Length: 158
Image 1: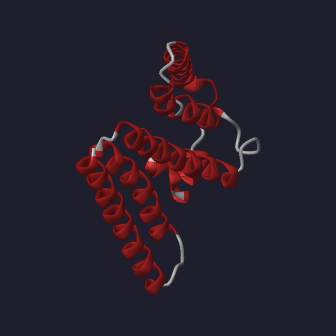
Image 2: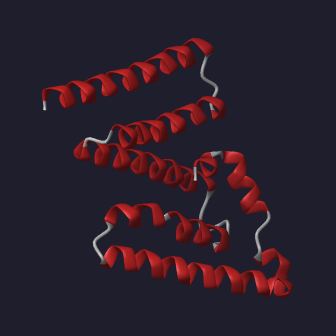
């Protein structure tokens, strides 16, 4: 999903739409339709069983399939990029929150890793000066260190 936060990836997906192929692309439409229905079914099943955390991970497949099938005029590039970045940020925050509540350091680091990866991807996609990139990189490292120290102190006190 992190790859889909890049502008160029979405541009490529938008330019090579299936509907431009006409009726010759019906097998691809059929496959995408079946996969979309299966993904929505699995998503609803996990939501009904109360596994909201698992259903958060499952939102990506139906969303990406709908974006691929939608006409470009219906979904401009800007909002699609914003939703993709917001999804990855919420996903990282949810993993981090779950790790903090359960006290599991690997899950905390996974959440921080997702958020840090999103920030790092923005480094390559933006025109930030090298000094700003360096300062942000150091701040990300300090955040990792601070969270790990706080969790370890909490474990020692408990």
